[in-house]
Image (tube, rainbow, N blue to C red; front, side, top):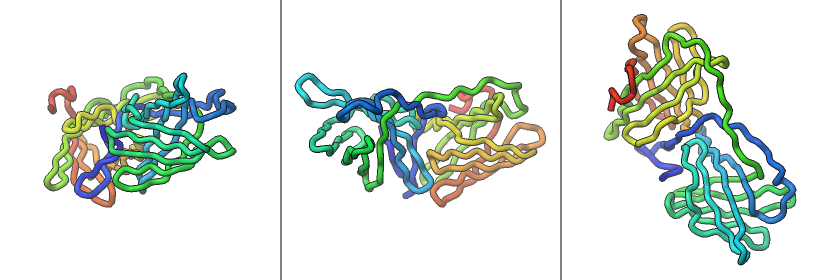
Length: 242
């Protein structure tokens, strides 16, 4: 399972879960490196929240798993891990990634994630919990909307699921050809017939016009400096587009 991948030279991230909020636990005073950690990997306009879970074995060695929160990828095995003289190093062979960092006196780990490229990544102690939205009265665009992003040699079928809540419109996206479901839409903004859906963790944005008959939304998908037309059509259920 990838944390970072590329589509036509542009960053493409496969992300899956709900909107998390940070919850800082009592582990902040614990010694050593064992425990729960969270950090954000930034690549340009793209952001990925990660959670690292480290435990210590009876023989003094360590083991760990990594969660890619925005990808809904939990329990990714850390292949090897070491901690000595405040230096933390671990590898995640399944994504061809590795990390090196230093635990400082403030109790944070400052370091670099390497996966095809090197990016700064700092970890702080704490866990991540989801934020729930209470259902609201359905809007006239609630439901599933399907379309195809045409990126030249690659075509990706996507389905947006729009739901109105007490906090306003929310949405998730399925990337059918990548078997990725429930990718969170960071923000949904509607102004009359204009609809904008932002996905900060992808560095992607959809902007379109809702048709008067509420059967389609004609717009553009933008990501990584590129743009492609995207026509979304209302479907009764996502399975109808597979």
